Length: 295
Image (cartoon, rainbow, N blue to C red; front, top):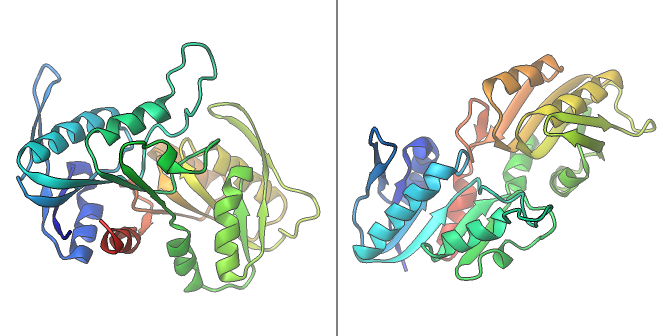
C-alpha cells in the first residue's frame, strides 16, 4: 500500500520535512491550538490510504495526547492505515515495578500507542531488561531501527588516525562495538557507577591505550550529560588527545551542553531524532528505507 502523506507535530518540522522529501510525499503540519484553560484543539489534513504521523517524543506528555487526537481524526476520516514514526520513543526506561505501586510506563505506552496505530517505528529505543520492542506492542507492528550505520558512515568520511571509540558504560557497548566493527577501529568501554540522577562516576581500565587518542564517546542518549562529563574527565586524566561525543538522542539542555564542553569535549554531534543544537546526522535515509521496504 502506497503512502499518501506525512503529518507532523510542529516541533518536528525539519526532520519530518527531510523524511517526506526522501519519500516524495506531501507533508502537513498538525495544527495545535492551546486554549487558556490548558486544553488543546488539534486539526489535521484529512487523507485516505496510509498516513505517517511523525513526532519526536521528548517532553512527551502533551504530544501523546495530540497524537491520539490526530490519529483518531484521521481514522474517522477514512485513513486505512496509520504509521507512527517516533525517532525518539518515550517512557522506555520503566520496564518493571521497582517498588509497590510503580506504574510500568513502558507497557502502558505500548498499549496506548497500539490503540491508534498499525505500525510504530523508532530508532535505538532505550531498553534495559528486554531486547525486543515488539513484545511491548502487542496489537500493532513495532520496528526498532539503529542509527549505528549512519554514525559509522559519518565517521568513515573522517581521518581514522588515532581514532578510539569509547562507550561510557556497559549499556553503550552494543552501539560502540557495532560501529567499531564497521570502521575496523579499536574501542573501549568504561565502568559506570550511578548513585543518583546526576551522581555518576566512570572509570576505564588502567591498561587501555588512551594516551594521545582521538577519543569519541558514543552513546544512545544524552540526558543530563553527567555520564558523558564523567567519561570525558576520566579520558582527559588518562591523556586522551582530543575528546568528542556522538549520541543518537540528545535530550540535554543548553546548560548540560555547556557542562559537557567544560569537561573537555571539543565537539558534540547527534542525530536529528530530537530537534537539538547538536544535530548533525539525518535519520531520513534510515527511516525512508524502512518505510519503503514495507509499510
